[in-house]
Image (cartoon, rainbow, N blue to C red):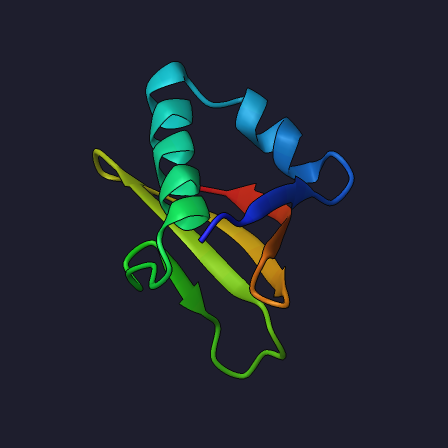
Length: 85
């Protein structure tokens, strides 16, 4: 599996740029996992119940939880919308 990750406008990029390097590294690790693994563990990527195709990428770092909303297009394309802690 080799998924392509793209961004919707600059919302995620602005969120990402505000994080320290260790958080950025963890985000990049999870993105690489999503790009390469067919069945991504729900710990990292979860469909949000009651939504039509909206997913949450979840990053745990120390005692913080970061969430990034996204969706798929035919299982190959991930569109990142926004992130928050």
